[in-house]
Image 1 (cartoon, rainbow, N blue to C red):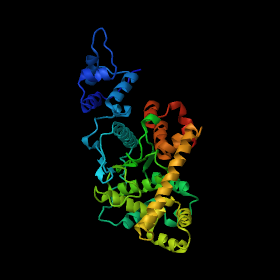
Image 2 (image 1 turned 120 degrees about the vertical axis):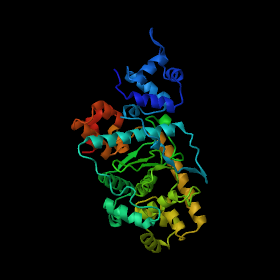
Image 3 (image 1 turned 90 degrees about the vertical axis):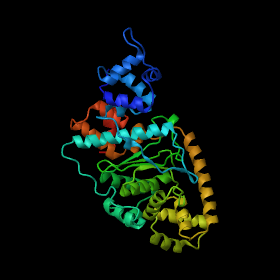
Image 4 (image 1 turned 135 degrees about the vertical axis):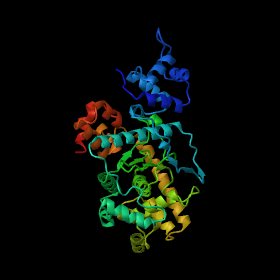
Length: 397
């Protein structure tokens, strides 16, 4: 079956990969015919005189490290597709030469652009979301927190009433999606063989005013996801898109103040200074590990998040913080091994719904229902076979 793609994007992708026609054709496994060489066939496709099959397109996408979705865009992506890289290793910028991470970022960007186009195709001119880029680093973290709470309709009393930290994450994600933010949990290109460790990235923010995206690394500890979500929401409020790997427990990082600022926003949202100090005063007589358990239960966050915040507020000593952190890290490593050894797990639909999020599923399947999106294109965006759409829809309403 032929793939009716944009030939200009096909040429652009090859040139961005710095491959001449002959090398690209060979890398993609395109064969010669009686009348044309493989390179000539690729040139014809780039000229728009003919189109590749879907299998051939998939091979080209793999050769160029591009998601298949890219080739269906109306025009080649602009240079602005390059995300700001806020990642560090120690006190130095992280090595940007990570092909899997680069391919993953392009895949997420292509998905986000498809959603922007789908929203634009839905009828009226889409209204930009007013909170994207509304504040700057000249604001205080508390000001950003207050605005996020107002937009999400999520006062601290509601947060404290959650059953547990998983419930808090689900509630915050649902509120973010309700105001137009797409929240994705994913950490590979579709196979565990391409898993990206949280040291490479914890979160990505696309600060688009029509369809902002947050991507959370699904390979990070579940306890870290809420902090990452709030960190990336801060990026959206500042209008600063990029890719981050700064630990929730880092201090002021050497790259400058933005990542530390977003961490401060996340910490103030989840563990407001005033409420935490009051709660600490009530448990200060307990043994430190026991106090951390009590406070983590009250605030619906991890024990490590509580301990780190108390250290930064000069309520516990640095030695105590690092001792607690080492204990929690050891527990997490053992838990991760146990999880990897367990057989079974959530069903296909539960896993996909968790990864994609209700907002993305509803938007894409709504586009199918309205006739604005073909089943094939919807399948590409969701990464799910069309035969599974009904099962996917059932869990999100």
